[in-house]
View 1 (spheres, rainbow, N blue to C red):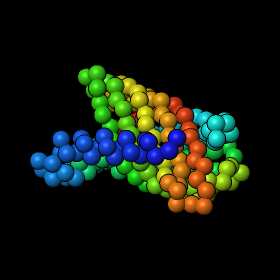
View 2: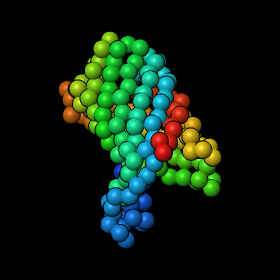
View 3: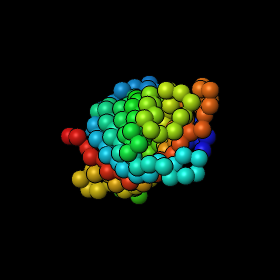
Length: 170
């Protein structure tokens, strides 16, 4: 996987912003429920499953236009750690019970016993699809990619496939 998910995040988010948010200021601040998300799944490197990962993300209680700021941290059973900050974009469908979410988050990577990704700076971009319960809990399947966007000496990247649960903080 290359920068496809990051590009999709930018195209979808900026298109939504242009079409639906620029009457009051394209990046005007508005309140939104904060969320805490927990996910777990498999890490793949160069087509091979290499580790399990647990990922924790906090979505802040506001958005700028269609973009909700987020903070995340993950750790693998190999001791690899990533933490970063960025933004997510969410599209709801099926009477707001289904959703698709894209995110882009630059961060810092510590390899532990994991693979050398070429840089301490690694960008995490991903997509999630799922459903939201009547109480606001979201359950989804997430796929993301991490790489240094060719800013490092090498750029092999890695992927994660995870099951995620996200809880509103009201």
